[in-house]
Length: 344
Image (tube, rainbow, N blue to C red; front, side, top):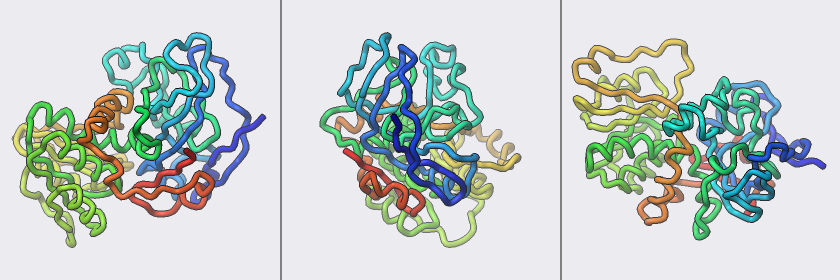
């Protein structure tokens, strides 16, 4: 038997390929059938430019139906709908017990244990596939509310969670605080951060970007948007909570300088250079906290789902292109703020 999976071959080339059925050999694992998969903001440049050698199955944002479970799985049974966190974690190591699931000690990999990154993610398979093998199912999988459509739920595991984690913890410490989001290097994450900040009660959210369409989307979400048509300035008007989404050294420095004294700046952009200069002296004198990491999918998914269930957050308010499953190879390399491949 074989399964069909969307496979990255080389830079600029993805296609359907057949692969052997994943085997349910681990009694703690589950086999799931992806119902919808969202393309993460990193997936498009990763496929277009070839960050990691192929071939490997793509996709790591998914909601799925449980098909089969190992003998040791107690929480799930065939037919259950689940949200699949994109980072693979064991639930029992020191990091997991501290709810730092993105730093799981058991599932290490060059890019961190994750689906859809090939060997760089630990070889866990990709979600745009007929079946996906999920380890440690009782710890790992998150219940998918019946009333929420798969096309919404699949956006949560990485990008919606990433937007939420930039504002959730800081707003818990400073309720109502102003939020500044700078840049759109990750096309959807900055917009999800706006939506999360407003859902959590920020009294004002500002958005700065060089892209007019994203600025329009930001305004529709309730942000005060500024279309930047010149190089990054030294700083913007300050805010206690800032998000760097520029992917540019000058943009990062401007965002850090725009962070209030004892404020928090979180970067969701990825800086691939060996060195990225930041204004450490100015941060030091003002007591600025800078946070950079992958989104901690398993940790924040329940909080994000609670906001959606309460009607405070709607991920589909962000511009979302939804296509049928069979069109995935043609659409995977095409621009879209958020792309969803739907088979449900």
